[in-house]
Image (cartoon, rainbow, N blue to C red; front, top):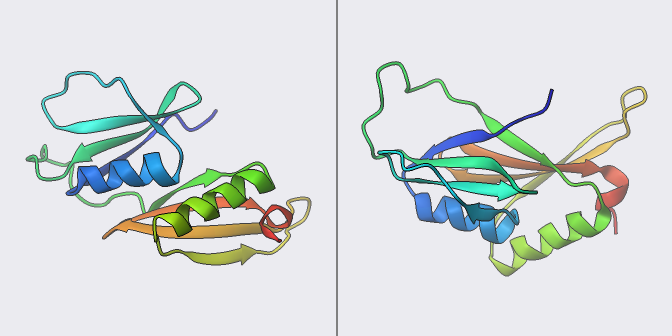
Length: 132
């Protein structure tokens, strides 16, 4: 099993789109002609993030609670450093944390970005990828 996609409902579609394209490195792609504005953002040819306009009326039962955050794994030091560079270029604030080694799982570096109120995006990599 693998994650197919995450849907983020946001009142600022353009800011969210810019974040995922300019910072996370996704690309805007085809989206079915739904009645609500939004974007599908792709990684490796798959629509990974679906953005939906929060100003559109919600269907009954489709309000809170929502998922707290989504996380993207970075597989190399080069990928991690490129992310840090894009965050700096665009002046995006972030917080970092570390997850200690647990059994066979190596220590992890985490980076959190508050995209909008209630939406957090996490990037995670092996701790040795995040060290200079």
